[in-house]
Picture: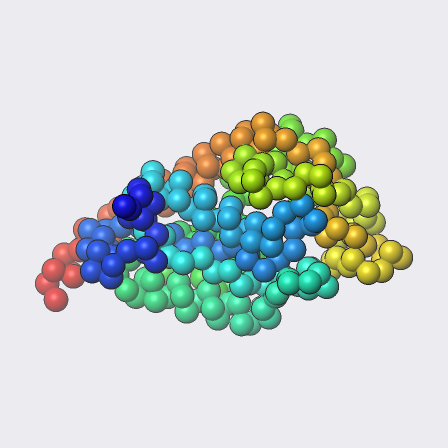
Length: 262
């Protein structure tokens, strides 16, 4: 038997059902979330993918969108010293995003939301989408919007962090607690830079040394913090999606009429 999410993730659908939904004007969502990127000793390498697909699923339920398969390889140069972590060059990643997004739009989708869970991916995705020169696509970041940063500041007990830290671990405790091994959570040293360069697990003398691969203090994470962060994140994403769809609503009817005339 199918589930409610089966009508949103196109990889679980038949092509003619996808065609019908596109013809009915369904918004598309393209998640970007690494599946081969270290997240400390306590979180799996596919942490970003889990978050991207969970959030995409919740967004899709609200706006009845279609979700394309997640881009699980991206530009993540800060983690390549850790086993299993992969990173594409900027040019390769930009080309990947541009081609996939362009084909989604070229396939008839009137609106596309590119849902980004990364940090080093933000600038390349912006450039890739700018080259499409289309007002039918919007890049949304899961940490963007006014609510999430405010709640994160209120909840944070760690002195620093941005990766496999208190905030990200709290998110995972809320949405996939069975995948979090808090017994292995380990704080990173207070690095010399607020935003480090490439982390290293092998050189204790480096200013970017992190034995576990975390940057921050995941030991301070709790499910309650994660629930509050997720709620703020979803409110931000839903608000951006609604504004984007409303802005382009006047384009949908002409696009449908044109497809009927062909």
